[in-house]
Length: 111
Length: 117
Image (cartoon, rainbow over all chains, first blue to last red; front, side):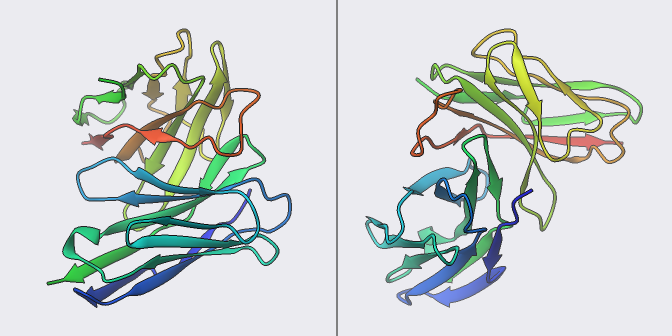
């Protein structure tokens, strides 16, 4: 079973602050890394799929990087807004069969 | 409107009763998945199916059963053998079948919160 870790478990930032969090995954037999945003009372929403070492993806104020050799991915949020408050999940693709999810990072952006 | 539906949103059952959670998708996806979430934990995989009439156990399959008789439907039965069934259950689907692409992501339903009294 793959072990996917995320840190920190939770964080609180002020509106306008930039922040980042980490997803660690086993680097051997890497297939793909997925980031999701999960807002309260909604379904998890796909943010990024990352497949190549050195990948950088961006969607508005949110971006992500990938290092498959050392087994980590960073998610960055620039100028956090209250609507960014959510749990951010990463998932490692288990040999193309299924996903293994990390426990998530719960972000609260205070106005 | 394409998407994944799960019903009901909230479900209450007495201990010892089996209960079936519904998951339907009209995205024409080959693969479907069931996850469970407990407070403070990530999503844990119960069962998944990459093609009709076939399914595989996930990490925590004990006390659960599934069927995949139709492409669009993947119901989950929580049996009385499941020792701690109270949880939030999420269903997902993906284009990915047996020959999936690295980029295939999973799309989630709204979830069912099951409480066993």
